[in-house]
Length: 158
Image 1 (cartoon, one colour):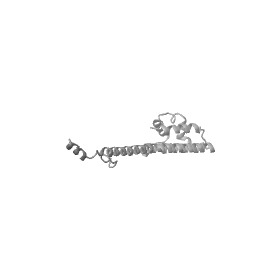
Image 2 (cartoon, rainbow, N blue to C red):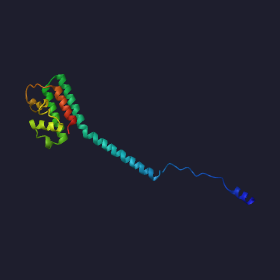
Image 3 (cartoon, one colour):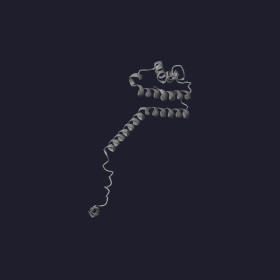
Image 4 (cartoon, rainbow, N blue to C red):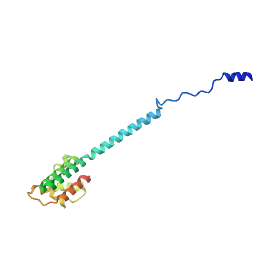
């Protein structure tokens, strides 16, 4: 037994291994990091594309609001009508292309606005003044109705 005791005395105490460092990470962490970076890039791209896709609507709505405020200050309905007509045409050209929109005038222009805005207020309602109103010296229009109709079309056109 003394041999065993001598052998036991020669043994060293239990020692723990060095702690595992945090660098370099395991391959799974590298893959997860690449996937997360890819998802962040895709979400940024989609958000940027969505923002730019509908930004023209926000710009047009702001221009319409500015024009409406100016008509309330000056009470110049004819200028307001010209500005709304021009604004709707610019928005339509941006949304549908110059080839499709630029040749439309009169009743065809109003029919286009009705079709794309899912309404009949341009051909049969208050919006019909957009076809001929800015050619007249004096027009009887309600700027509130024109503003509401144009705002609705800018927001909801297909």
